[in-house]
Image (cartoon, rainbow over all chains, first blue to last red; front, side, top):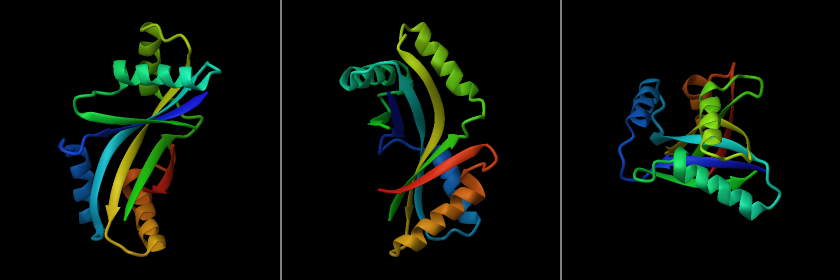
Length: 79
Length: 79
C-alpha cells in the first residue's frame, strides 16, 4: 500500500531556502511570482493490507522521524 | 493563483537520502516498511488570472530552476 507524505513549514516559520529560490526566480525575470515555499515529499510503501492500519503506521513514522512537529505540518495521502 | 509542485527522483536514480531514512525507520522497528523515497515539494503563488498562462509560468520555473530534468520528474497541481 503506497502513501505520499507532504511536509511543509508552518505558516509563521521563516523559509530561508524558499526565499533564496524566490529571489533567484525574480532575478531571472519571473515578475509574476508572488511567493514560493519549499517543503519535503516522501513516497512510502508499506506491507499492510488494511488501509487504516497502514495509514496509522505511516502517521507514526511521520511523528517519530520524518516531521518536526514544532515547525512543520504534514499531510498523508493514499496513492 | 496557487500551485503545488512535487519533484521526485526518476525511478532508476539512486536515492541515498531516502535509503538512510528507510534504514533508520527499520532500526526503529517499523518492519512493515517496504520502501521510502524522498523528493521536494514547492508551493507557488503566481499573480495571474488565466489558469493556463499561470500554469505555463510555473512550468517554466520548474524547467529553468527547480527541477533537474536529467534525474528528476515533476508534477504541477492547482491548489
